[in-house]
Image: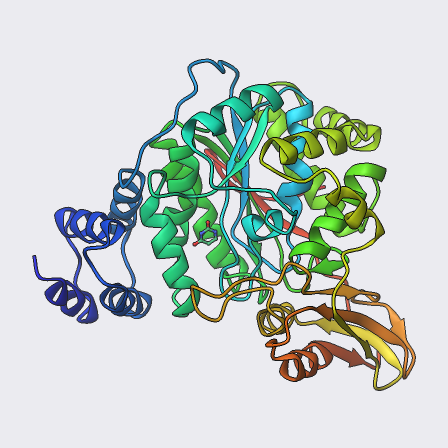
Length: 445
Ligand code: URA
């Protein structure tokens, strides 16, 4: 097959056959198709789309680009969680150790920063020594011992997603919903989970601009995963402002560790963590109702046991035990700058996409695929949407350590991301809908 002909076909809006998709995915994973040809194909796909059959075939080909894990020595029902991605979206790191503490195995294969959004793997790697590039044997042994492991795509585990993900990140081709579904589910099916709680982010801080497109993706995730015997429940949640009090890898780990230690934290972050964590407890069969599951999740979180479990998992993955002190006293950075309000008023918006791209400029994300990531780079929010502010009052603190960061651009962008209004903004819902095998329903908390 000639790749240039397949690019041409997509450019003209024609469907690719199953054999053509298999060929593209397998050969790209092997390195036989160069990035520039795959980037052209992705851009054509962005404009012309892929239909349901093509999307399902991408998923099939991506799963089969590597091995599929199974854990015959871990008979319990395995449950995982994933988000379509957002800014400050760190719930996986709070939820996974709590659910593991409840007795449910969580074999979590995650992704890196993508576009303006953060990635669980980059956050984890801000813990000195921790490695996410684990072999099947290492994944299995850590999962068996601690009920949870955090891994990455590798040359043998969904290598096609590893390469496509990195290319989509730097070519502005993330927002292709069927490829988002294929990317997420290829990791989850290859990791060997039996059930999945999905957080589909709605708004400018994620990749789905509105509720309709999020509902469509949620339904697709539920249906496609069912074809692989994975039971999925998906929630549509708000991503029109950063989640939690921090954004950026090291600062987000610091925030998660504090929540795991104390059981308390920023309310929106705690609510989404509790909703998804409780759903995992139900999917894993340890709680019968959402109410009972929420209570169990909260009890474990408040006990501090999930904090210790997270430390043991991280140390089994190479984390240096001395690092915990550094997170307790606050991730240090070589440079920091306060962002102040230019006038009196209310915080009308904190535009998450601007915060996300400012973080890339500070070094927390990648401009090109080979860029190193600065683990200390981040933003600490002192004010939330709806808060009253006075002129000159600090809104946030930006921090970074790399001399080569484009800090002037980043700081200007963080400043304009805070929209100050004369009147208090109307509160937005946090959770919009819930989708399972019976379809979508409005969410009532
Ligand atoms: N998360 C993923 O794993 N893949 C995507 O494409 C988007 C979010």
